[in-house]
Length: 235
Image 1 (tube, rainbow, N blue to C red):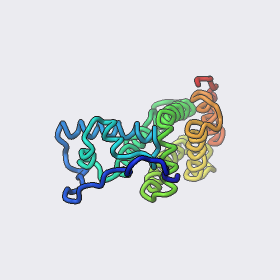
Image 2 (cartoon, helix red, strand yellow):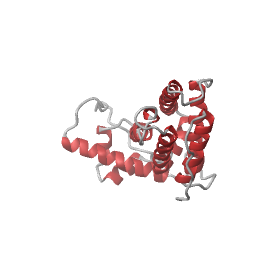
Image 3 (tube, rainbow, N blue to C red):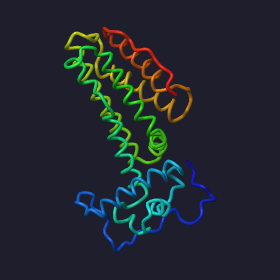
Image 4 (tube, one colour):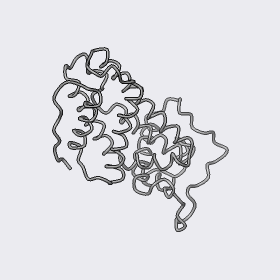
């Protein structure tokens, strides 16, 4: 990602060194909280439209309808704004819908639970595909975002490994499988498939067909009982 040589003006105005950096732990007044929400929504639109390198803080403030200096009441830099936007996205991606952890108990069909979780994850990924692609890009050049990506991945892997262990204890999944390695292989399959389909457009597929295929692979790999879902073309 090389900077654009035709970008007009500086990337953003320099912060006033006489003002301290915003403290994310301090409660915000109603108007300040409203401005922060407006800046985050604007930052998302600007990053999705322009990418990270060419996005400018002045563009974010303009998009939010706020004075340029108000940006620095909430964020130190463009990187801070992107991290905050991605933090909201990561929360949605980690908790998009049904959890695999619930399968051995309340619902009797673990395949149905896995399918519902895959559908929810893929729908969330498709909604946030531009930002997920941006995270992949900036993570290659910025350790802060590389760490964010690792944390996201480790949270998914740990959660799915716990679910696989529960399925094994319930006598539903192949007991010979290493749950951590199985989680790594199956979770990576889902996340990279979502990236290839929705962020890169390498394989035309809708959520329904992709979720059905991934669920069938999950169920077959774990040796789960139950019917396998059929795909549907949903764009």
